[in-house]
Image (tube, rainbow, N blue to C red; front, side):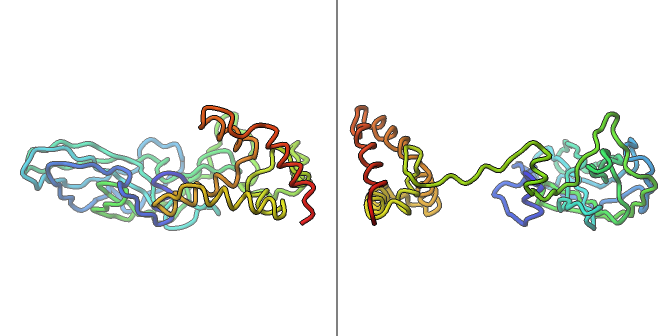
Length: 274
């Protein structure tokens, strides 16, 4: 999952949730009322299967607009598919003078309850209870309702859909070979060359490499934020030596680390007995 779906499913609290907005006024949400408590869906492409209404009141001292957002949450994992905690399926922007109320109507089609079945190559609706959530943002829940859904049809394949592989495939050498792929063997660190990274130099190049690595890390400016400092450290560790020399020469505006010095260091690393 990405975006707000990931945040909701993993319990991450963003500073500004999806759908969040500021206003000079405030709004009160009434109960969320579905047109039916139980629906049957035979066609995952059906245009309209459920209507929901709620009373929205401008409770502040200014005229203003509110975006009523409707999220749908499945009560179970559908067909082995891990679905998000809830998904935005409808919304409506409403302008209200201060102190006034209005009935907001939101329509849901069958796709609001469906997920894409990769095995069948089409949309699938699985029966069960679904929670409907009226919110001012993905985190600001104002009203809830529950509807029971029964599905009378299988997945509706798209025209020209290609049969898909299972969602997860064990990436063995045989499977990769059938796909025309091959796992590249791990590159040997020795002999050291221009592509050797700073981290490999510090870990594998003996005393000479460890000394130079310590000098580089100690001379690196330390960020006040520990996370930023860790990122800088990891970026430095993954730099190839050739790129490190290029950065140093480019930052100084002249050649301060000549190429012969790099060749000499590599010769020293490759011949260092300890």
